[in-house]
Length: 351
Ligand SMILES: Cc1cc2nc3c(=O)[nH]c(=O)nc-3n(C[C@H](O)[C@H](O)[C@H](O)COP(=O)(O)OP(=O)(O)OC[C@H]3O[C@@H](n4cnc5c(N)ncnc54)[C@H](O)[C@@H]3O)c2cc1C
Image 1 (cartoon, helix red, strand yellow):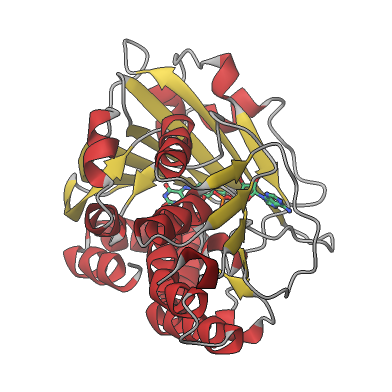
Image 2 (spheres, helix red, strand yellow):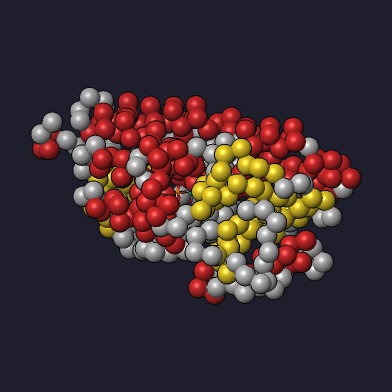
């Protein structure tokens, strides 16, 4: 195929989905430009825990070794806490890959450019959403209307030291107003990341640190109350929209959170970003090489994304509701948290 007959692809958003797609297309020699509003490296609100099919996608694209060389570690066990209830320490069926987004996004941006991709950072794309040859990997869409309760996320890093002793590679501390996940990542660091719902009129912690440290006398406060957070790593997001959406309902070509955001409690959003990027490579290559029209490529990507994710999203939504219901803190919660059957079912269905 002569280069002149190959159409180039523009990707809006240089996060996980956009950069991975860009790399996959460059590996096939397709010209690609990525527009990224921010810069690298940067901290992101994220549990930094890639669970499910994500590591396999990275391996197929030849990226897993780069992650491991950057210091990524594997989480193999998890423990859940809710009020005074707690699960046993459980083995994860598939180990999760843990690396800071600070390193991860920069590593992918480097690889994309090494392969000859054109990356415009600090450049917000403002063109028509449904233009031909434009893929939206621009991340979650903000909730425009004010809702009650409202969701927001906070994360920070702390050294894995004296103030912080984990009983499992991932600890999830659940309360009625959200949850905080604590897991080891690269470089002797622990990531502390929470998703919270704020109700009108409810009492709120005074600072982001206080949100992450949990309520007085909670299992979370006992665990990380003395942690010393790295002030530079603090970040937060608000206006999260957690209702699942379908790719086939959209006019434009989307991947990753731009299609829909899965409830973060599943730890599967990054995997879905990677999987949807991989799904999009072949249809976009077929368009670029003139074998498919744009319409055919766009519809095929949407169909394959919906096939892969719709059922998973429905289970994820149910899981999130259950996790944040008061049931989990009562006597029934003690039984549910100890149930191996429920654990296996939820793990399998949400990834
Ligand atoms: C509290 C919380 C905890 C989470 N924990 C986990 C976890 O443990 N495991 C997991 O797998 N997932 C987790 N996630 C989800 C995960 O972070 C996302 O699913 C993932 O980042 C999606 O990747 P993406 O590339 O689609 O979007 P993003 O990573 O958000 O990237 C989108 C990019 O697009 C850019 N952009 C947007 N608009 C434009 C524009 N007009 N022009 C140019 N650039 C633009 C943005 O700057 C951004 O860099 C969590 C999310 C939250 C909120």
